[in-house]
Amino acid sequence: MAVVLTAALLGGLLTAAALERSGDGEPDRTFAAELPRATALGEDVLEPAQQPAPRPAPSAKPRGSAALPKPAKEPPAPSRLRIPAANLSMPVRAMGVDKRGEMALPRRTTAVSWYRYGPGPFEAGATVLAGHVDTEEDGIGPLARVAGLRKGDRIVVDSGRRRVVYRITSVTRVAQRDLDTAALFSRTGPPRLHVVTCGGRYRPERGYEDNVVVAARPVERG
Picture: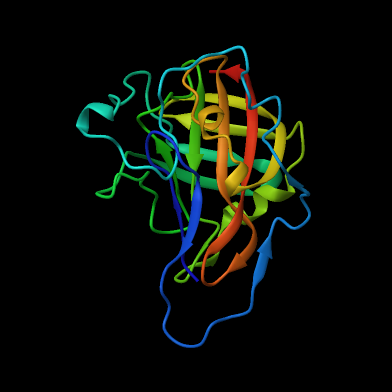
């Protein structure tokens, strides 16, 4: 079953929507069931002292071209996501928004997108990487394994010949209705990484109920 993780500008929710599939419906299924569902993102994601300007936030349409921030420039864009504890190594594609005004994602589960209108790994604020947990074409993808990560696990983001090493500070499964997209896509505060995919129970008529958000802070730059 193909699942579309969408993110757009200026408010709303990070959602999962099932693409239409021919034939009979399939049973409900669940990803990240080992993670208890939280009602909010952790304190490591939230930056309560910050008052960020309007930023990309999933599932609302941009209000005209003026609402679209300029792409982040140098230093180089992230090119690969590596998470040794999950045996995960995936190319990162710098992507913006699609024709619907939603965050563009790779079609396959084998790559993730970096929201290029937000911060990069060497800048202040949250670098957001996102991708599909599964698709009809690929089945279950590598991002299904991130729910098993633990605090302190390493994440490496390569940017050309440079890299940033992060340590995970939290892994949270949060209902889409409770997702704080302002914090998730924040452009202010200390540099940090948010890796996002779908999770929770899958309903054929609505898609996944939750999102899994991995938050990490940089510990080494090279």
